[in-house]
Length: 146
Image (cartoon, rainbow, N blue to C red; front, side, top):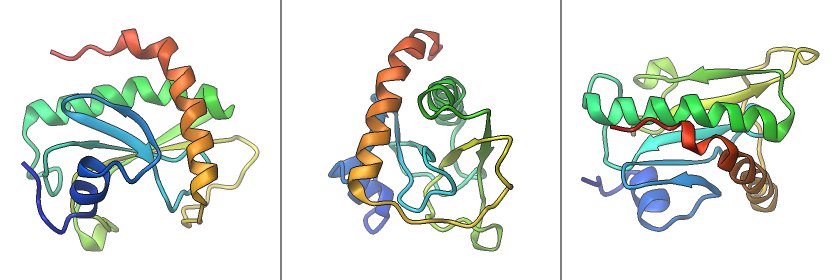
């Protein structure tokens, strides 16, 4: 179930216009084009759900399971000390794309916590996505989809 006009449905799921880290029948993970930190990944259900109030429990579980395992690969690939997982619901909660998604944001102990969004070019995103994909292979067997 896609929604026309949704950037994630149209550009990412249908046309793969993203630096994709992981994809299966139900979920996708790709690099955020306005990262808080290098290695910032978004995880989405392929079907369109607006927010936490809209997503069904099966897709919710799949997105969160992928995020749990993918977080390990992101940390290792970029040498982070920790991970923030974020999820916003509604415009006043800073949800900018109205398609359910989780943010995986790498963190380093010696860096100030800053939530401002940056810019990244496509080559940088593709490079980091490749590093994460390579490391993710070590953890992929931990996925427990039912």
